[in-house]
Image (cartoon, rainbow, N blue to C red; front, side, top):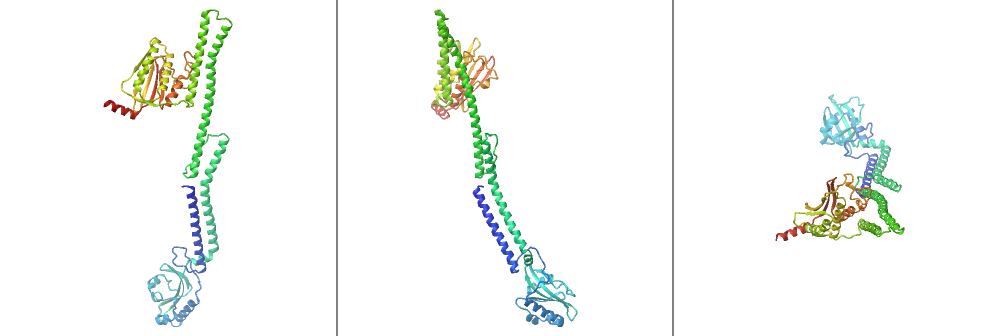
Length: 492
């Protein structure tokens, strides 16, 4: 429920309650002033003992009482009673257990049931009774007819049983209504303000904690209104900010590690170059053979530095997403066949057997041709460095799955320690701790391969067994529509 709706309902509720209480106050005033509001049911009943009658009613009662004392037989004369009766007076005459006269003729049976019994002493002569769900106050006089049968006369007046209560408790009732009104208004205000102030207080506390650098907390919210949406947005901001700071710290650690690794990898060949150059300057290379050896070493170290700088530059551009990728649908089977055929000549010269295995059916995938070639070159180069067997073999195979194609590069080299296996795709990580560039490389080859594969929407992982070899797997997204189209063309 929105805050606007909540406030609207609160105000409507206050107005309705105020109007209801106002009507109740008017109702009470009407009782207090008139004392004659009819048709009120199921409320507190209060007897009207010694309730004074009007002048007309008193006169009629006195006339009836005089007849009862002197000529009770005349009370059986209907004409006589009609002369005493008046439009505003209700008279009842009872003889023994029968109503011989009643102004309200339709209530005779009810009157017989409701009127009090005969009392010769006439002590309780005034009271209130209920007839046909209405309250009546009465005054009565009991006597004996000449035949010694019991007789009673009644003068009735319809009244409200609430008038007396209202008159007696009017100040207290008004005070109760006022206090009740204030309590209801205060309670509604508390409910509305609590649903707004409490979440805002939580936001304020969260902002203070963020300002002090504390991001390890959570702002929980269950409401779906605007304040709840604000709290959720604030919590999302806190999570993003925490992730950003953690990422920044990670970047800082990576930067320090990168600088350290670059410094080490550049310093090692640079130290060698400086040493050999000083040897030449000092005349240590005093023969043509030594001079050739020194210059060859300097050239090799400089070339290694150039390769390292190129790889650093490529990795940096990949990491910053500065290299564009031209993804296209290619026949991966034909592409791999051509690549292995071209690369096999160089590997044969180094006594390495390179083999390609595939089912032979066309398999289209979305790749960047040049970038995939760089990945395969890095993988083959990495496999070659760890060959330790007389018969050196690298097998490249192609497999198809439901949604992607898998390129598998398997060698029979030394394998990778299970402890090091999860980290081989991290930059500058070398399973060989000496960081010898002749065996360990720059530590960027597999990291560059992973960056390229991920940018093409694929994934890369490795499996290895010590002394048996290593398998690198590359998954690439298939070009489904084009595969189907190609299959249709092949079928035709």
